[in-house]
Length: 121
Image 1 (cartoon, rainbow, N blue to C red):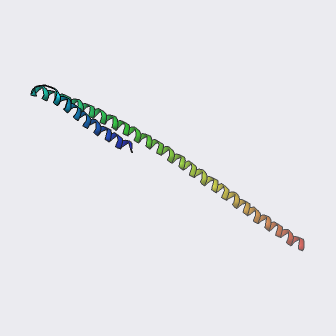
Image 2: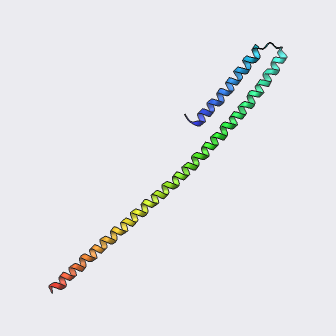
Image 3: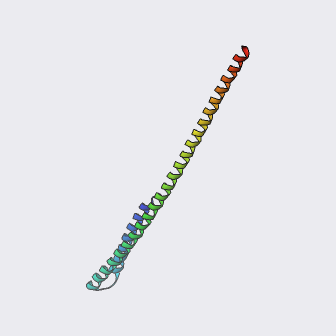
């Protein structure tokens, strides 16, 4: 489950739980209509404030995770580029060495043929 989904579930749970708890507490308390409405308004404000706080926290944590993922991805891309560059350099070096060895072998073979021809004269 992703962190974003967990954060949304937490936020929804907090809001629903807060509303249900506040409504239950207020409705079962023996108060007048005016006091009850005042308490409901106060509890709604408390739940609203908590919701804003939780949403802010979830948002901040999501941004932190996004930064971390971005940083890690950038780092891994850099390492992959370095590794690829190293492999390319190694292959080029190996290719040049093999080519040089091949050219040296051809030159040595031609020199040997020249010696055989000179020796046969």
